Image (cartoon, rainbow, N blue to C red; front, side, top):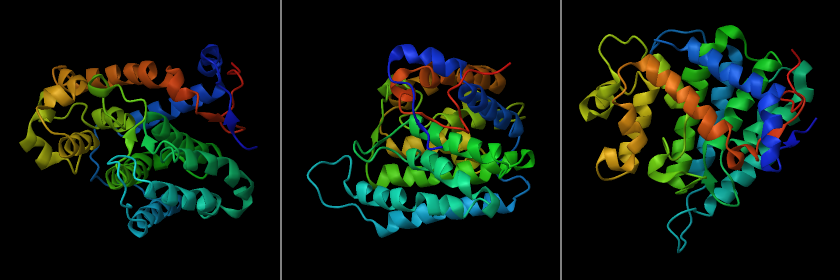
Length: 299
C-alpha cells in the first residue's frame, strides 16, 4: 500500500494523535532514547548487515551531492541543483530500499521508500525541517516493523545510521543553502533538527563531568563532540551562525541553565510533542500506509 496524506485540515490532528502511527512512532523514539542512555557515539555496539546496508545507502546519497555541484544563480538560498539531486533520489529510492531489505520482503519496498523520499527536504521549496527528519525516523521505524532492524540494533540505529543521516543532511543544507522549513527563527530549538537533541541529551544522562551548562563552552564542545550527538549539533550551529550564542539560539541557551541532563531530556520530549508532532504545518505532510496506519490504536 502506498502511503498517503491523511491530515488535511487542523481538525484532523485529533485523528493523528489517536492513531496507531502516532503510538508506534513515539514508541520508537522513546525506545531509542532509552537505548542510547549514558552511551558515547564511540562505544562498542553490534553492527548488523542491514545497518551496514543503510550506511551504504546514505553514502550513495552523499556521493550524489558531490556529483551535483551547486549552480550559479542570483538568489543565495535554495540552490536549484538540489532539484537535480532530488530527482535522482526520486527515481532510485525503491531500488536503494530493495538493496536493504531481504528478497522475501521485497513487496514492502515501495511503501518504505516513500518515507526515504520524504526525509531529505522539499524539492519545490528547497527547504528542510523537523517534518523531514520525522520521515527518516518513520523510515527506520518501518524497517523495524517489517523485521529488517531488530531490538539489538538500537544503538547502531542512532549512532551509525541516524548519525550518518545527519551528516548527509548537514551537507545538503550547506551545499544547496536550503531554507529552514517552518522555522520559528530564534525561538525554535534549531533551524533543521530536533531528534539528535533528544537522543543526544539521553547520552549525557548521569555523565560524571559534563553538565548542561557546559555545552555553551566552546572548549568543551570541541573536545567532546565526537562522543556526543548533542555537542555535534551545537558545533554545527556555531559553524553556521554568527554572533552571540544567546542571541541566535535562545532556546538552547535557556536549556543550558537546566540543572540535569535527565530534566533536559524530559523537557525536550515534551517540547518535541508540542512543537513538532502536534503542529499541523509539520504533520500535514506525514504519510500513512499499512506500516504506519492512521487507524486508531486498538487497545
